[in-house]
Length: 414
Image 1 (tube, rainbow, N blue to C red):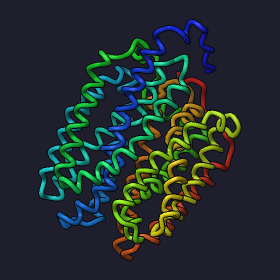
Image 2 (image 1 turned 180 degrees about the vertical axis):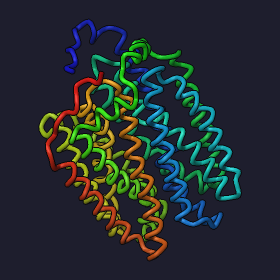
Image 3 (image 1 turned 30 degrees about the vertical axis):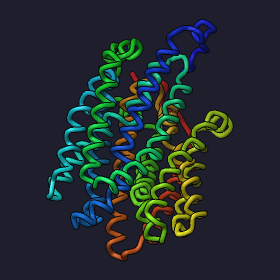
């Protein structure tokens, strides 16, 4: 579907101003969602292990459980948003999600901690990640969909540089248990404020939800999309790259510390990677015009591979910063392109559902990656084989995605 060109009246009406306000709110939600449920764990894993004696493998499995819950829940979360808008999703996160993380902070047993933390962070990821906020931004600004997504993901780029150093500092000053309580309070505040101030849903969200009855059932939408060769390649590449990317993000600080970099410097450089994501987002429109979405993703995977290899020399500042810049640019582009490329493959209908499905597939790989990496590290007590296997996964993903034809699955699903 070709977006209609906005008129002069549309450009100057109050509606875009209101849309920008809501997109900014969605951006704040995105920062907290990814910051609490995703990026902060890399700064928590070693302090939790040192104070409790729980193994790296067990903590890696806990984070994998977060990814599984977020992935499976994202499928239903996307459908929920398609039908009724963002408010119910944000209310669940602000209450159940935040409460579960707060409860995890007082647990002394691994099983109870893992269950509660996975439930809380999994709820945040299922109902607050891009498969929820990107479609909400598009519906808020139907005349400026690409601009809305880019603006939203620019906000999202600040999740890592804010939460990794902040979490590291909070753990140092207050301990990991108090840090989790602070994160729970912040999650509750941001999501509940977003739910209340948005007053049910935007007009476009309500209109979109009212059309949900004319959409296909979930199973039909998924099976129809699966018939596309491009979708199948995208699914396989997502599983493998999801595993590789989450290994990098989960273990980036421990890898740099093990290489000889001070923990504070490692946390700062990991945070810089988040700022570097802007380099993969700000120039995205002209790059997409020249290369197309698929080739741009393949290029981003190649940059992530090069950045991961630099982790092997991260005892020195220059390679460590090089990792941060390359990984930031590549992951910044990939996270934005997931929605754009999924939309290119499957069309505009059932967008939240199908983005949730892609998120679920990506999460399957993401869940496997940290567990496998933890087992490999425990066997050899070295992160070198972890990094090498991660780069191999990125290479395989790029080759899979580069091959075959770039065919559209469908323009609409009926």
